[in-house]
Image (cartoon, rainbow over all chains, first blue to last red; front, side, top):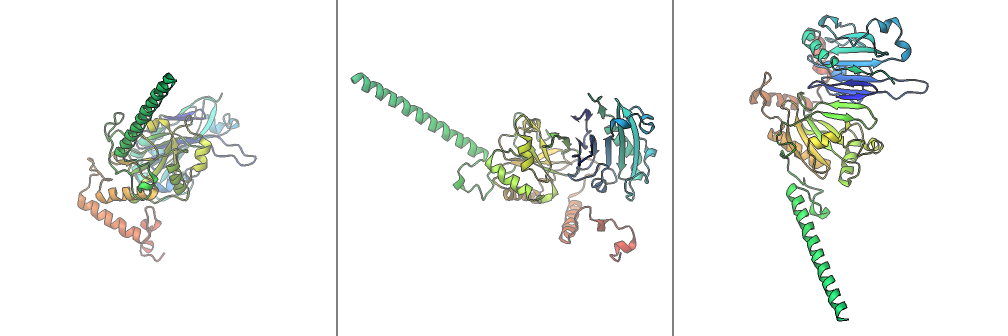
Length: 150
Length: 250
């Protein structure tokens, strides 16, 4: 298990994971992000997995949890779901990608847990393998834990 | 006066015995280190040859080569990080380094100069002791683009005897296939290169993806030809989206 910033995750075998907080630019405020993937995490990658998703093979999965500010926690977008959401095979859509990559599919969910607002974003390497890949994603998602901010 | 002389003689004798004992202990330590493959004499040629042959070193803490765990700890920047070395398709070369040892400094410099070429395509990862034993700031200053995991637990689990120390883990086989110490990056590359050439880095694995030796040789030959043509894994030219692309006319 790894934990930081009140977030914890236990990567299943074959998964890599990190919990980080991007360095803030002037006037910017950043929040914790969790990245997990079944491929090696490259040192340079975007918050939504750019630089990593290009390396996904047909059986690979990427899962990220991005925290938003406390002001987001009370908004309708984030309060529809009040638990860490799992994924289903059909929740993945080829068009739900930050950048369309042939064969891949993504899913995005917004939720609030412990008073903290998150976006869950996941990409699978192949829409064809979505049944097995979504099960792999849920293995990881099920270990994600959020503590209330002190 | 006589008593003084006798006392001095006894004292000199005792000191002589003490010095002899220390020298003997020192010699035994050197012999033990030599047996482990560590050469402390800088004129002994350690800079030009590997000082330890690769191989798996059974230890009380890690009696089996399959005692492999993923690398979990923190980055020098304070992020939590877990890197998979087993149950994955790639191999990992783990460099256990410290910020203080002079030999490690050469490796830090080599790694900071740019991602080094690891024979066989293994992923290179650096592991230092955790924040209770190393300064994250000092490690951050030494680190380059190679992933760094600060984890005393990894040092203890892999039973690392000294630094620098290298462990080669086969991801598909889920086991350590080689480990040892070397004086410089070129020596490590040579050791790994030899192991790759011997096939030691691809131990036999059972499962759905088991391949025949002939298939593996064909794959290796194709990989070599592609690399010789400047085509590395992930190259877009390997994934044409149309016949025009495949023909190189796009």
